[in-house]
Image (cartoon, rainbow, N blue to C red; front, side):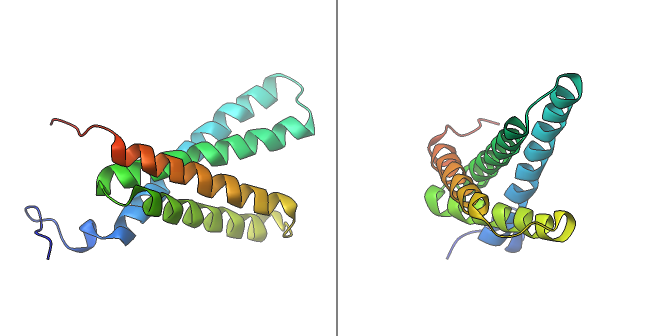
Length: 135
């Protein structure tokens, strides 16, 4: 049985809470990347293939940041926490794209799923193996 730290509830120490918090971190990073990419697209003429690549880069960077933050908080099971975070981010983005953009399931969905889980897993592994904060 694990000991709780101070007045922290059991839910705040759970894997579910960790994945939900990392989901928020991942979406903030995705939105920040999309904001920067939208500034680039508004200033210069960018081909359609580059816009798709920018969206994939934004998704992968958000998945990496989410996996990193989740594993850094939990300090164990980095690969598993990264995979859980990556799958969660992909499912939420995929459902939002189905609802708002009315996209269909195609080959790019599977490649984005692969990239999202791989980058979140790498973020989880790096997050577990990073140094702890001293404060």
